[in-house]
Image (cartoon, rainbow, N blue to C red; front, side, top):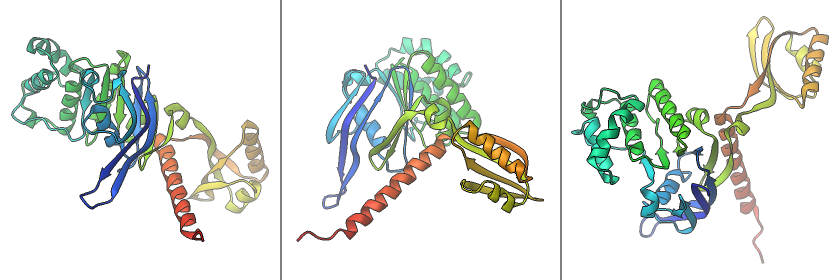
Length: 328
């Protein structure tokens, strides 16, 4: 059974009393398996936070189906098994790290005794050892995020939903949060992660879904999206006309001249045989190869390609619709 199951989910908002209807989610379908870290990606306005709010029962859906931990999304029985760190969370400044955990733990139905038994080890886990007695108004942004993560973990939930957990956190803090997320996964927990920091998502996630304007454009494993592509980057010494003549018929991109006839560029290949052909042709032309390496696509590269392609398709559709001859 999937931990999160969403089928043809739609959400429409009314923008003011006389305003237009905003279609925030348009038939979204996805599932999150137990024990995985699942990244939810998309540009601003894609519908990511709306989806999370529907899962948690903060916002009601318009149509479709959404379940969480085998229960209807938003039901009390599902929410008690979920830890949640919202974007821009606020912790009252008069609280200390310890009393903040007491406050949120009691809201989750925990006893004060149970909270006291867990909080010291939990603060150590998130890198706040020795700071439990300090008021949160002395905490940095990264420390506040780690405390927020601690409160989401406090009641030992089966599913943890994180909305921009590393936003505004320095590299050291992001590294600490990544380490905690991997520890949570090792415990068999499931993490549903929404973040704009694609490099962070790439480092921790098993699978991702890319949302754009309320629609799912892709669901895939991170390794599938970032595996070595059939593109090589070369650094060579030789005249540019000799290089292009030797590799005539092949697309060469991302030229970067380095002076003294040194050039760097990328070339696509079909297979290992094509790599040998490229090397042979350059050597025959008297071009010296300084370096050659397979180019790896990052999650950010894949994300931008998908979102830009979606924009091109929308523009083409709008142009086509605009040129349609009115029916008689």
